[in-house]
Length: 264
Image 1 (cartoon, rainbow, N blue to C red):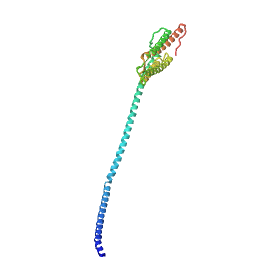
Image 2: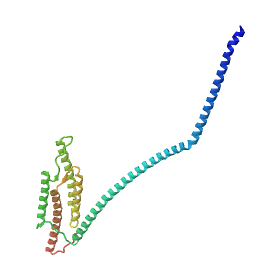
Image 3: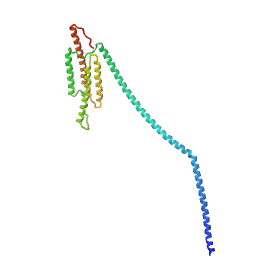
């Protein structure tokens, strides 16, 4: 009986042994194949590592180039803005310089004429009282222009939040501020006018007229030419009134046998 069992198991043992041997041989070949693949992969990675580094460097250089390009664009835009601002400021300063130069030339010419006693009268009244009356009438005309709402010109179509009445109220307030500022400049000029500075006072009023009207451009409101003309007439009348009084005083002193005094 034991011999029979041995006879049965022996072939099975031999078959299992052969299977294990074949399996070990296959595993050995698989391990050898994997090892060869690993070596090939390492060789491939080693061979193309320089290419990978070059790609990384290229990407880094591209990003730096984009950054530099953005910085340059920002600088050029900023530089253009600065140049535009400087050019605008230069043009404005140049215009102001030309304007001041013309005003100085006119003033120098006027002062030169006045220093020689030359002044072109605008009115031909005979007495100082006539000038006083004319000044009073001039001021009455100014008041009439204000009452008739013709001292300043406005479009009359402003609205605020769709309200025409609110827009008209704003126009009236803005017009009143402009006229008050202009009247203040004119009154100051009239109070300071002398025999030798009438041209400068006229220029002062003309400058105030221009400056205040520029401020009114936003609202399209301006002081009228008629009102401006009346203010200039008031300055000229005041100047000629004072000059007439000076002449009359000198004439009375001569009639009384006295020596005429120089009037500063």
